[in-house]
Amino acid sequence: MIKKALVTGGAGLIGSHLVKRLVNEGYNVSIIDNLERGRLEYLGEQKDRVTFLKLDLRDAKICEDHINSSYDIVYHLASKVGGIGVYLSQPYTIMKDNLLIDSNVLNAVVKNKIPKYFYASSAHIYPKQLQDSPNSAKIKEGDDYPADPELTYGWAKLTSEKMILSALCENPWLSATIGRFIGIYGPNQDYELETGSVIPVFSHRAIKYPDTPFAIKGTGQETRSYCFIDDAIDCMILCDKKMDSLSCVGPINIGKEEAVSINQIAEIIIEISGKKINIDYDKSQKTVIWGQLCDLSNTRTLLGWEASTPLKKGLEIVYKDIIKRINK
Image (cartoon, rainbow, N blue to C red; front, side, top):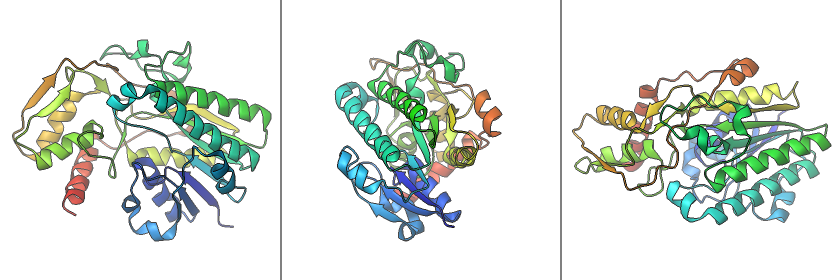
């Protein structure tokens, strides 16, 4: 029997790659996306092999009507996101919209008794004091409390996690995964200079504006961990299989245990470009997160999974993807 999967946010970075994998594995796939940031072209040749619905998940009635009992699993990836400027300038909108979306989708899953639910959470749920140094220690899943996320985006995600755990208590037929993504990157990422994240933006600048210095907001010493998209999708597929025997998978961290500074990212992309590009620093910009590195020992134990794509190889793939998209 062919399984049916619904992917919210299925035209985004993680969603588009997940959809391709699910289709290749024989799933009947539907997508809900408002295309605010996602793009149908990200789906490539799979676009004609899925059902696409452009809908606003902030509408409870739409969720109840379209997230129905025909599905075997819902991968809920849709969220209201933006760059750090958006998070700081629109804290109420970010929190309100994400809580609306998450509660509406979960309510539809519960009401229509869809047996499996994957929720895309984030490392932004972790307390800011655990991320206040470039050399911050690895963060474990149990470090989420006492709660003190830096951004309302993190507060919304953490609240939604608690809703899922509460739903599991009341609905024994439901299995759920809470995956806390950290630094996922890859093809199909937003590379616009004002809205994109560091890897695609630096790549874009190197390709189109090599005579303009890279503009780093902060010192460049801030550290992150970066996980290539194919590795993240492997983990998500394993979570689906694990839900066959476990009612609650997680919360688990999904990322890579490798601290990389923003300076290092810039230097590797400049090397890949083969161009001479200078770097400028805007130290007047407030550094919100100094270091973000999560412990993955629980994920390894539970799933036997570990990200394997070397950073430079992943950055080379992204660079080539952006050249291709710019030249279209």
